[in-house]
Length: 382
Image (cartoon, helix red, strand yellow):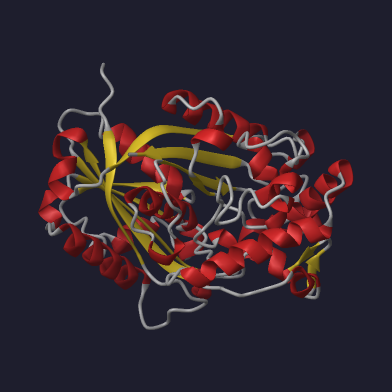
């Protein structure tokens, strides 16, 4: 069967904050989807199906998508759910659009972290119940162990990790949707409180409320919606080992597999040269350097060189996270879809003050699970 071309034709997102008490999750989705439909000048009747990415853990109730159907415009429509990783919801929608009777898809995601237990409490229950949970393992603890191992093996310094925070939180100053934005020096990051050695507060993601929506369309109808469709050129995802004792925390095998699948589909042989901008999911500053390596931007232990040489700065050879990334904005489930939306805006040329010049190809990456267990990589292009 011939593969249908699929494009992103529109994106919308909310401003993310620590708390948005004036709106429920349903209302956040309603406002975001309404904004997108108005932008495209269409009604919900022109949407063939909807994929929502939510989480029963993060919503605090079972079958969490059922409670947001009407807010996302899914009443009397086909709707399906992807749990946790909202970038993978894009891959699911892409696959369904390969059917000849579908031409449009709406992908939505939200999280209100302000109404849940802490991220540490909820990620604690991700750990293996027999061997890990009794030790209090959670996302932060695993990221700290991962960072310590990475620093020890490759001589990465705390200053180099801190440069990621300076870059991303500085980039966020240009992003009207970002939650945490700051003009910092490395010394400022190093003076922030230690949360789990060697990670400090400004090395770690915030907790945010927010929502995002994107519209996908097949080649047959994409030009109806926009003159600047952004084509999905490649995608890949891989779920790594669950048991912490069975995996090398700094080998990032699952990311390598996901990236290579996306690159093969998109015809990318040299990502550092062929990708114009990357939106990477980096809940912890140390992980951005590690993901550089898993994505093939550099060799093992060389992520520190990219940040030292300014290659991933806004004016560098491969700008990474011009939006500010997850270090600036973290609605836990929606963060992956936001990476896709921000990458699409770069290719459209609509990223406003955070726009990188002459972007023809962009990479969006999402990760979920302890230490980066699941990775999704999507390549977008003109």
